[in-house]
Each structure stands twice: as structure tokens, then as C-alpha cells.
Length: 444
Image 1 (cartoon, rainbow, N blue to C red):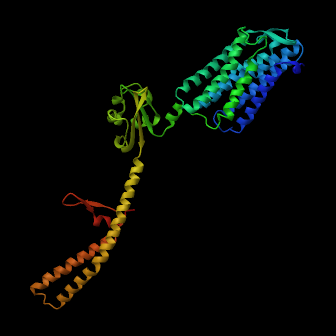
Image 2 (image 1 turned 90 degrees about the vertical axis):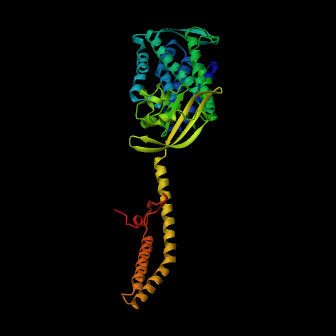
Image 3 (image 1 turned 180 degrees about the horizontal axis):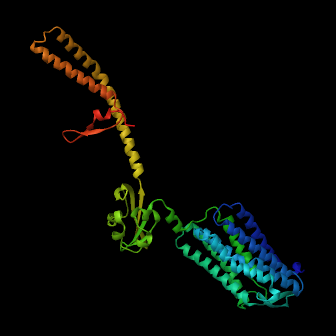
């Protein structure tokens, strides 16, 4: 082997070392969404660079051809794991079902099998020869038919990943855009080099494949994102995933009051699926919420509590209506409805409890103040009745006084027995405490 005299040995070794280092760091975040695919990506990249280093370093056509084919045990899987990582990173991990992952690995699996059995069909490498450049041998290969199928598939996966990052940048907070830009560059750099190599446009003065070498720069960018950008400390969650998982109802109307976005919570509130709502006039499809459409047009923001008539009864919602502006012009309006029915009921119950406490305290004070005078009046009335003849005209009036004091005593007893808060309408329309109902025992 001629690694010591090979100028490509150091970059390849550096790329492998950085991949393994990132692999170790990512292992500390193995519970973070998408990290398992990042680990598999680092494994495939490090295996590729190691085997390419062996190809460059060994002497003889047979050895170089062997390691050139062995690389296809790692190369085909890198694009799959890259796209899977990006899907999880951008909040679209629900797409990564077992069936889809298995289907995406079919072509890479076939490529690996064909690489191992290449001698019988030459579908990966059709022919190979050695050319001397700058004092060391380079393997020059002619690719077979399946290689181009594998390459096309890999490029489609990489293009999908790049587009996923580009589209998500428009809906990403500013502090996450640097992370996604680094991911995009780390993907484009080595694969653009590979594209130039396959097209015959050398970007270095040699016939060597620059793709593994450019991985040095690619993984260096990823290393910067991990160490300084804290890539795995805060994984950005996709906008759609956030909106769809919100427990509050979210509705966005365009300038023509058409529904352009609605989440599942709002669909349940309206009582209709999203496909029958999106793109249609809000006044037609929003049901019990339609009267909110005309709110908020005259001000920047509205925050208030409203009562909506729902299928299962009235509900109380905290409604926020806010404008969405683009370059200073109104582009859409955001409606957020938070169901506060339960909290309102709890608040009302708390108020009733406070009122009951106040009524009990008042009842205790009244009873304490009135009890002795009532007993005194009743006692004096009874003494007078004992000294009077029943036929005396005053006897009946004194008996009436005694009867009224007994009623007053009964009222004080009821006041002492209040256990709940009940009200009644007074003659003037005011609300007063219903002593009779409030003193009744609770029904079980």
C-alpha cells in the first residue's frame, strides 16, 4: 500500500474521523427525532471513505477493483438515510413508516447484491483499468447499466431532501435557518462534485473521484452545526406539525375571507372535514363561527371571550383575531379559539362558593344579633298572655306578636342551616338569596 505517499490519504482519514466523531456525539441524543437516521448516515459515509481510502492505497488492479465494488455496500444507503433524517428533522417523521423505509431500501439492496456478484454480469462496473498519475495509480472505471439506475435514484432522493430544506426555510424562524442552510450545503457540496466527476468535468487535476474527499468539507459543516449550532439540542418542528397538533382551533382566512388553513381542532369545532372547508368562503363553511368573520377588520387585534352555540350545547371560547401582514399589507387573518368552557364553569362554581361563604357568614352574624331579642320578645309575650283573660281583646294581639316572633326564630334557624347558594327574584326584579331553598339538605 502507498498511503504514506498518497496526497488523498489525509483528507480521507479526516473525513472518516469527523464522521465517527459525529456518530459518537449523535449517540448521546439517540432519543431525539431523526438521530437514528443521522447515525446510519454517518456509518455509511465513514464506511465509504474508509473503503475508498483502501481502493486508493492498495496496489494492483484486482485489489482496487475489489474495494471499488465493496464501496457499494455503503454508498447506496447514504441518500436514503439522508432523506429520512431530513424528514424527521423538518417535522415530517410521520411519513417514515416501515413500509416506506423498506421500499426505499429496495434499490440500494439490489445495488449491493449486484456489486458483490459483479463478476458474473458487470452491471455495476463494466470495465476497469489503472492509470498512473503523479506517482500513484488511479483506478479508471467504466460503469455498467445498473450503476446509472442506482445513481438516478440516489440523485432523486438527494434532490427531494434539498427541496425539502429549501421549502421549509420559508416557514422557519430565523434562528433555525442557519441550521438548515448548513444541512443544505453539506448535502450539495459532495454530490455536486460527484455530478461533475460522472460528467467528466474534473474539479481537481486528477482522475480520482472527488466525492469522498468533499465529504471532508461536508462533515466539517455538520460538525460545526453539532458543536456550535447545537443541531440536536433544538430540532425544529415543522410548521404543519405544530399547527396540526395544537389543541386550540386555528383558522386562517385570506383577504377575501376564504379558508386557507384549518387544523383538526377547528374542524371538530366546525363539524366538517378540512377538504370540505379549505378554499371556500368562511361565512359559508364555518358554521357556528361564521359570525366571527366580520370581526377584527377595523382594528389590529381582538382578544375577547365569546359564547358559541355548538351541537352539544353552548361553549365559551377565548377568541384571538390577529392580522397577518406581508410587506406592510394585510395578507391574511389568524383566528385562534381556545375552549374555556370548563374553566368558566369552574370560575362560576368558585364564585358561587364565595357567595355561599359570604351568605353563611352573614347568616351567622344575623342569627347571633337577632336570637336573644327574639327570645326576649317571645318570653314577654307569653308572660303577658298568662296574666290575661283569653277573652281580653289584647290577648289575641299579644298572641299574634308571639306567633310572629316564632316565625322570626324559624327564619334564624334556616339561616343557620344554609348549605348551598340559591337565589330568587325579588319584587323589584333584583336577585336575593333564597333562604328556604338554600337551607334544604343536598340531594344524593
